[in-house]
Length: 409
Image 1 (cartoon, one colour):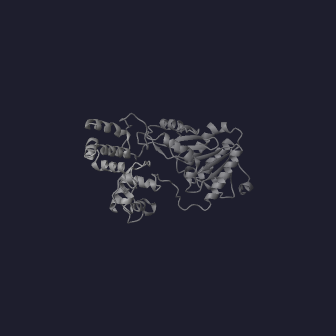
Image 2: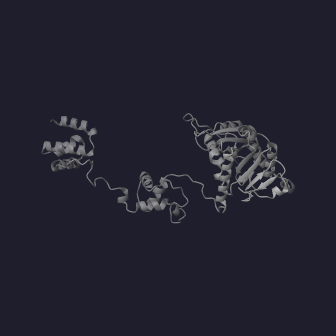
Image 3: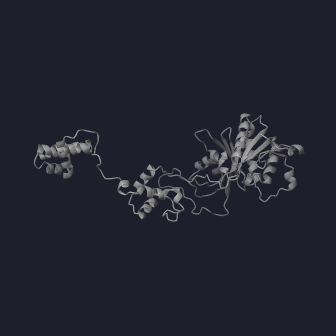
């Protein structure tokens, strides 16, 4: 076979052969040529003389097929083998326990691949970011966002209050009565201001917004959410003034008049779960006074259960309603109140959540003081278990004996 024919043959076969098959072909051709075959085959194939020589050795030794491409132990040693102690050094850098260690080069810094690579270099190791990523995954690490789980010094009856709320909610739902979770969402700036997240736009045509995200004297939207647990349905009142107890209770009243009354025509009672702070806080006198007015107007017996301090994330309105609203308007400037209302109302989920939204333009003054006489006039009856968290506001006056009598589940 001529040199040109052999060169063509090798060029045609190379893409179809793995490393070992290629090496054996080169060795077989060199053996067939005889003297000077190794140099000729290396020149025509572009392979190194070492590779051809290895192929010749395997052909002459008659090595049987074993499914391997390389011989055992072939190839460069892994980075972990070449640099003993690398894995342990990486684990020491990324481990949460070392974050406050004054000897750690990553103290109070983000654990990015670049920072970890620099930290390892400072310890005498040379690795790429790709290798660091591989080692982290092998060790079970993944990129994770901060997860709010630490709540400080939890109340000793926290879990018992959760059980109380769960039991009471189950009783109401089984009886076909409404159970709602309420809270105020973070206030949003109205205007050409940046919103977190991204939205699909034509390439190179991002929405332009103001460069300052902390202006003063601009309007703000105050979304107050009502999540109907039994119906998996949301209702949001968007306020334009202040987040007061009057605003909070009016949002509940608007939900009842708009949705609740038609959905629960036979119900004479309502269970409300809320945080311990804000416009619906358990210590806020105005909240109870406003609830009493709503109870009298609607004829509803309103039971309120407050989540213990520091546990607002367990309130269902947070993760069943507000989280999806935030996703729906990510990357989109809320230019006016109508945009806020329409964006909230367009929120849906694959599991069937729907949301209604309305605008509340009423002015709610702050600093309204509730007298002792006004709070004593509220027809409230407390549960035996943490009456400051769990109580019933009746739709009308109740006997003093009933007021002083606590309720048990």
